Image 1 (cartoon, protein in one colour):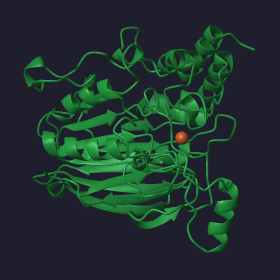
Image 2: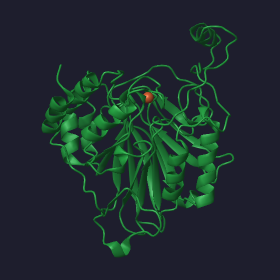
Image 3: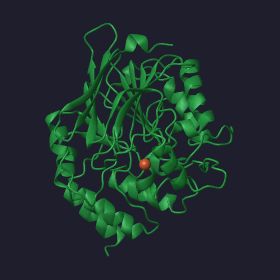
Length: 376
Ligand SMILES: [Fe+2]
């Protein structure tokens, strides 16, 4: 087995890892006032791709289709490797396997890549704040994704991060919350002592969509973000931007699949809707991963404006089951897939074209979202 250091040296050599600039490249005169993003890139963003759930021990043919879309930016939304371990030598080796993937190497060279983690690269299936190796895992994550030694992601209450692209009035904010580091325990459905698998079989025989094993926890103490991340997020939402991509490892809007998602943390979910309204954070849409299928959700009731959530999963993983989701728009896609966001800046307010595409690049779903409708 390689040591962690050996593995990382190999990993960075294999990827030709791109060191991201730390300081804003725009002039200080054009800086937004108040809170600052963690990083600021001067380029106007018009094409970004995203995806999640990539097994490092499988072929990853999807990168060819992603490259053909010529994105400026690729967002890794978590489960970027399946580590599932408390042994950090094993985790380092899993990262090395990802680094060795030719498609991964090409995308890292070709465009900017930014990442957040989900449970499997945080450490274990459905893991939360009580995962005992989270500091060691954070170090591996930050080393692999090229975070500098002084990056706040290495020391604060999670690896959450925000980026700002472009100049007013063509600013895009990318917010990547950390849903793992502070997460309180999940609550299982009360099935009256029956095994979940028995109940799931029964639902299936009844011909109804089978929800996962978790249930909504209404307690204000139940949280994914934790208070310090909430304070940070509120400040970030006050930064002026015309488009905000809320890049969440878990689905924000889907209701109610019973697997992991914001809907299990009812207080957190309502708090974000409230914060959008309170900070007048216009132009926000969610993208998400984790599910092993792609779908689009739209949450309208009791929201400051319609909240779209485009879920793309996975880059390698496919699940054939279709869980319930009352807010689903169109059909689910049960093939390897990635998401594309194009931003048309030609009008008075930007138009966002959100797509899911399969492993061949075929368009599976497209939604044209006018940010004039995403206003508090
Ligand atoms: Fe996940």
